[in-house]
Image (cartoon, rainbow, N blue to C red; front, side, top):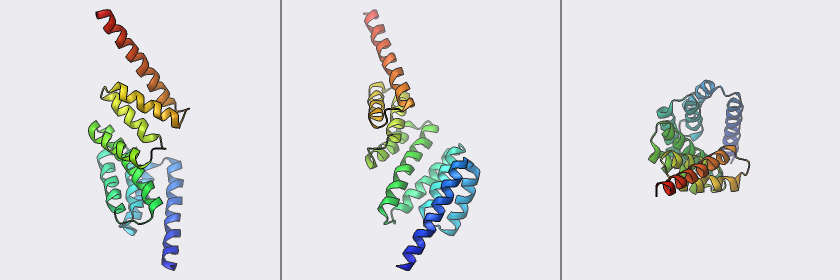
Amino acid sequence: MLKNIKGFFQLYRLHDKFDKLVWTKDFAKIVEFAEEVKSKFPNRPIGYFYSGYGKLNLSKYKESKTEFLKTLDLLKTRNNRSEKKFYLYYSYLNIGSAYDSLNEYEKALFYFEEAIMLNKKKHEALLNRGIIKMKTNNKLEALKDFEKVLELDENNLIATQNKENLITELMDSELTSKNEN
C-alpha cells in the first residue's frame, strides 16, 4: 500500500512539472524533460506522452506519432482507469493530428474516431474529424461534425467559421448547378 501511495505522489509531481512546462510552451524543454522521465520510468506512459506532445508542437510529426504509439502500447498494462482514459483520448487525438500534418487523412480519421468513441463529450476530436472531412471534400459530414462541436461548445470559433464557410460553399454549388440546368 505504501508503495502505491509513493508511486501516486511521484506521478503527481511529474504531471505537475509537465503542466508547468506546457504553460511555458517551451516544447524543446518538454521533450528534454520527457526523455529524462522515460529513462527513469521506461514502463510508464507519461514520458512518452509528453515527448510526443513536445515533438508534435515542434513539427516532428513522425517522431511524435512514434511516441504516442508507444504510449498506447504501455497503456495496455495500466490499471488506473482515469489515467488510462486521459492518455488514450489525447494520444489518439495527437496521433490523428500528426497524421493530418503528414497529409495522411485516412489514418488521421481513424485516430480521431477512436478518440470520439472514448469521449463523446469532448469536442476536440470532433472538430479535427470535421476539418479532415472538409479537406477530403466530404462537406455534408464535415458540417454535421461542426454542428455537434457547437452543441458541446457554442462559442467555438473554428467550428463556427468552418460551418459558415461550408454552408456558403454548399449554397454556391447548389446555385451553380441550378444555373447550369
